[in-house]
Amino acid sequence: MQLKELSTRSAVSTASIKYYLREGLLQPGEAVTATRARYDEKHLRRLELIQALRQIVGLGIEQIRAIVSLADGGAPRLEVLATVQRVVLRLDPHDAGSSHDAGEGHVRARPGDAVVHLRGWPDEESDARDALDAQLALMERLGIPLSAEILDAYSAAMDTIAGLDLQLTAAAADLDRAILTAAVGMHMHSQLLLKLLALAQASHAIRRFD
Image 1 (spheres, rainbow, N blue to C red):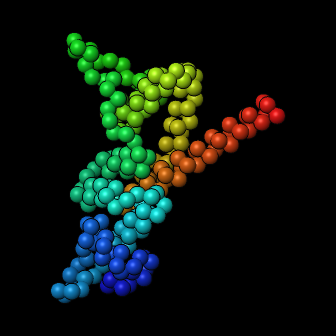
Image 2 (cartoon, rainbow, N blue to C red):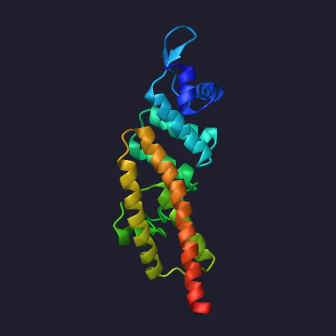
Image 3 (cartoon, one colour):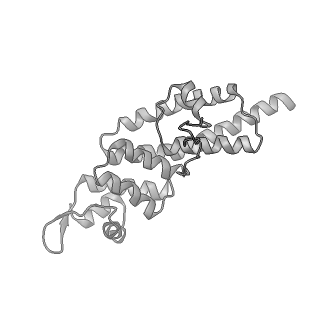
């Protein structure tokens, strides 16, 4: 298909398509002449991904570029999805600082170690683990109680939800579709979880105090 048909089928203006081409978010089409190119279904899927990341997830051009450049560069799917998670959930990638050597070759315990071991999750470095460490350390500094029972209940629920989410992502036929499913899913599901939690808290409060 040519640019006009690509614009019609994707519902993206030709000006926007040309902008995405200049920015490297969309791969060039197959050259037909010096001024014309042919596009295919891969371009349609990429435009769908870009529009979803911009309009639904609310990402900017640089954030989208960080994701699609990995995909176009042949990065492993795990690395691409980790980047999607970091960008979409706005995880702070800084190291919580609790896993470095403690002076004599000893490794200090990290705040999230108990959860990782409790759930049997891989004991691997990730932005998600650093973010959890930082959150738990902050709560401890603020004197917010967090019992083993609460961590067990919360992490068990999240483990189940994450497994369901990953089934959808793993079923995607290509990487662009996997990114779309993961990014939109992370964004919308995280909002859904917050709303469900709010309703559950309100319901418990009504039963107890009303």
